[in-house]
Length: 287
Ligand SMILES: Cc1cc2nc3c(=O)[nH]c(=O)nc-3n(C[C@H](O)[C@H](O)[C@H](O)COP(=O)(O)O)c2cc1C
Image (tube, protein in one colour):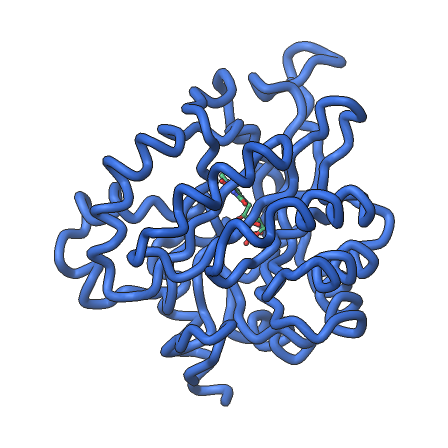
């Protein structure tokens, strides 16, 4: 079951999707039993930005027939708060830590990379490129040329393995993955949420979510995620971390068969915090 992810030895192929498992809160609830039965072979932090963000106004979640539309807005303590408060606790996990970061331009991303560079506790960086470009409004990761420009400017600011978390909200995800590969990414992860809208049943035409629009996750996006994983696997040699609606070992297996080396469980952990452990055990049975 063990896998190599850019030189990081993982005991099995199941990790968490960024922002979908609050391990610090879960430890408070489950205590030592969480560590004893830790479901993930690496832990991915939620997205950290340079400055603190309070996130979007509530409501932030809308349940759909097969998943969630979220508009959380990436609340986080910012880089300094992460280093001071979260990193010391995350570093006590028994598995490698992957820190997920996002910046709205190369200067911000470069500063984040440089600040994390000397932190031995961090095994790898995941760069979330689902961030709108302030000029065009498009996600930086939706355009291969824009992603190349960003990575060319920041890649040498970290010696850690760099995972680029692709956005599915693009015309051709394989082209974007190829740009990531050509610009020094060590792995790609996909998919992030698909742009979505939840209508307020009480107010026609108005959004339910406080942030306006949101992103769909869960079983509803699994087929899209599988298609994008296959397309990326055909286009690049990089290791792929695949996610999107994985809720059983059988569908986790489909992502591995489509070319992923690691799979991540996201929305399913909200329904059942033990889901990833069951998926890991089920994969061992299927192997
Ligand atoms: C509530 C929620 C919060 C999320 N927060 C982040 C985040 O901070 N950074 C990120 O890169 N992705 C974030 N994601 C996206 C997930 O990591 C994952 O890519 C996506 O949800 C698809 O997987 P799933 O269908 O298994 O949830 C979030 C998703 C949800 C549902």
